[in-house]
Image (cartoon, rainbow, N blue to C red; front, top):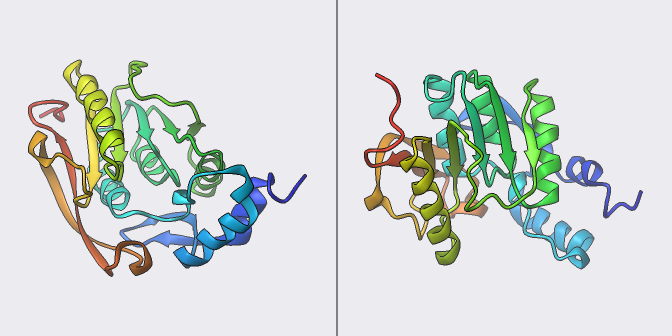
Length: 223
């Protein structure tokens, strides 16, 4: 197989298995340095016009949401869960460890899908990786989890509208976000706040204040 297409080999070559700083119960294949991996991705995979390797890092919002689910399993226990824009699979793995009946982790990047499968196996849980674009679709999930997705205006608007619709029909929608540019905090209420250790080369900080949020009046946990 071509080295470019051998996704597991590329992931192993450019990452190490490390504990997630804010959720050390979970280990992931993670890069030590953002710049080095970005350069490796461009050198090895640039011809394929793939997205940046977001799957190789534990982002602040995802770490916050994972910590929340590990500490309070009630929101996902026994539920059919979707982890949207999953990246490494961190949040989906946390949901599986918290007792979800089933977990799907969606990401349109084929390397993220491979990383999700590898990371789920590493942590001894079942998470089904899928690569289709789910925005606008409703497959009856009980819980939808999303973290670090509000970077771009158009994407954030479409995703917020979609998630709001899922919450309106009764899905529990939980969002992990550290104050990304297009996160509409006025539409949400915060459930938890954390100071999350992050990589300075990604966030220009060593610690990123991050929250877990739900739509106001929607998707409440049972009393």
